[in-house]
Every structure is written in structure tokens, then in C-alpha cells.
Amino acid sequence: MTKHHREMFNAIDRLMGKVPGRLSYVTVVGGTAFSTLSGSSMGSTALMGSLLVPEMERRGYKKHMSIGPILGTGGLAIIIPPSALAVLLGTLAQVDIAKLLIAGIIPGLILASFYVLTIFIHTKLDPDAAPAYEVAAISLLGKLKLITT
Image (tube, one colour):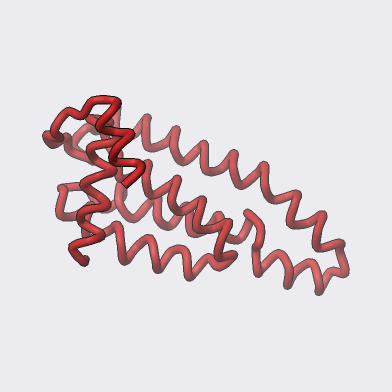
């Protein structure tokens, strides 16, 4: 991982404060956003895995809390447009591609929400799955500065 990636994760840590499992949440949000850009399940999973798994392991996350959200959000690329698989299947089935792609938005976002809920419940039941570590407190003004830089 490059110095810039580590700085990005440290900035996210400071922004989120002491939320348990915060990098798992970042994985779900980032994976969902990347799925809307790429439309490729393999591409999304490879990108998120190469960036986030080493950092999560370094911070003491258990495997299921680091790899699970990545695999889950990788599957969202199949559902959320522009899904390459949906276009292929729609073409083969001779179904209106636009309607098929639009039909995947709400289920994909609901699935992402369930991933977030699962992370929340899991961190409550097993706090060691995503261990807490100290993060310097930051004011609201400081958070705004981090976002704009």
C-alpha cells in the first residue's frame, strides 16, 4: 500500500471517530460507489481487496470482517447499474435493458444497507472482530478541513 493510500485511511479514521468496524463500513460504501462506476464484479472486488484487506489486517480486523464486506459489495456490481452481466442477460433474454438496469438500483441499495446492518450487529456481538484503536479526536471544523483537502 502506498503512502497516499495509508494517508487516505488515516483521514477516514479521523473523520469517522471511534465507530467500531469503521473500515468495514467504508468498504461497503466505497464498494457500492465503485459498483456504480465499473459494472464489473471482478474489478470491484479486486480493487477493494487490494486496497482494504492489507490495511484491515494491519489494524487487527478478523478475516470475515475484512473479506466479507468486500465480497458482498463485489456482488453488488452485478445488480447495480451499469451491470455488464445484466446487459448480457437482458440481451440474451430480449428484455428492455434500460428497465432491467433501473430495476437493480433499489435492490442493490437495500442489499448494501443490509451489509451495513450486518456489520453493526456483528461488531456489537463480537467487538474483537474489528478491534478498537485510538484515533485522535477532531473537531467539526477540522473534519470540514479534511474533507476539502
